[in-house]
Image 1: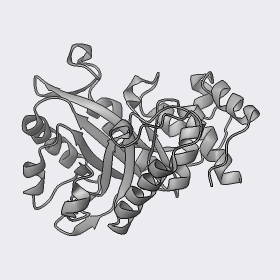
Image 2: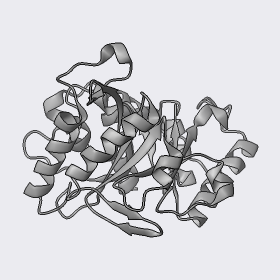
Image 3: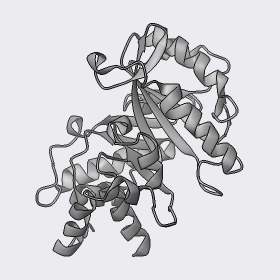
Image 4: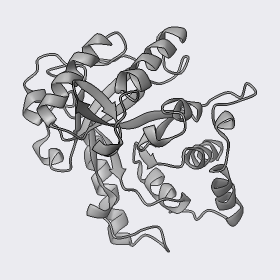
Length: 275
């Protein structure tokens, strides 16, 4: 049974969006609680890419990349690319530094991090460059082989323009595929497709107003159950904003809850821990 959030709790979540960057980072020595189900959508749009998400305890971040003149640049659109905003500088180098400082973990004695890399340019050319870059940081990235996963602090997943055949043909790699619902029928190795993602609107008409129709709730439950039976995680992109929707997907067992509002989702998940 889905429990509606009270007005006071909703106001708390809305107010949280105005928290300053220093507060997000845990200023004043506040302890950061790792939140394994928190996913930072388009993380690079925040004032401090990666740092703000980790300051809120997020255990999954999403970054869009374009291959431009041999460099993997971070942006949502090609015309927004800047030479000083590249994947290695904004994400990989800081992650390695943090992991080394934390004795091998993103969060000291805590869970690992999912780095969802959404390829926006040519699939094969971009992945070839990305594959070389991830290998340079192989000390921090989970290693995948056929039916074998060597877990490390960060797990890279490839989304967007995915070179599926190219990745499938690798005997050893430092990334896996962000799968689609059709993969639940094909049932590939979990070492190839550990996550299933799709847009919320492709499956559901409910946008968070009123109660979710029972037939859609049943469909959501069945989808999550099927993925979990195959030991895969679930994520929806373009998830409608707000605590009512978060409550539904949380109760359904959706593994990664998509959000642009870092502090809002953080407070929601912390409240769930305290119930």
